[in-house]
Image (cartoon, rainbow, N blue to C red; front, side):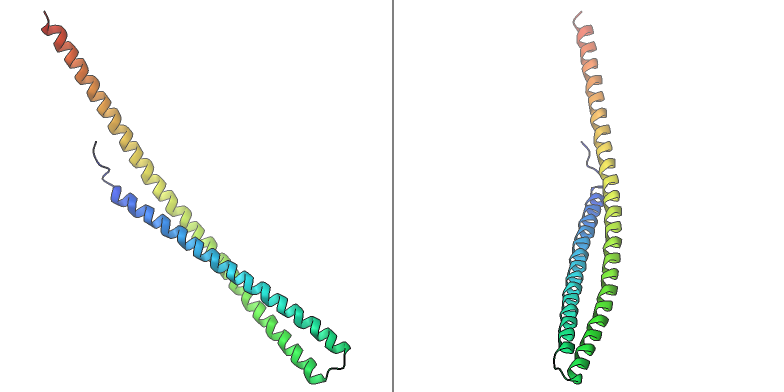
Length: 145
């Protein structure tokens, strides 16, 4: 049987597909890390808000209350930045998933082409064998008389 002439291209497509899959995994890990950082920052902001409420109810000085308010504002800014970063990470994941889908489609096309060539070669070989068998049968039949 002949070798598949596009095998190197098929191998290349497989490598691209594997690389695209790895890129999706890395992007998902990054997105999850950003989401976890955002959750932690939100917890910290909530903790600061609770402490500020208890500080207002207690005998805290005004400087301490202002310090809490500044910390809360800083946390809110950090949360805004993390939300933007999370949105970018989600967009990156979606983009990498699209690239993965395209890479897998291209690989599947080549695999299908390869299988079609193999099937055609097998059919041709079976046809050749039938022709040879028929020829042997004809020669054997005619040669016996």
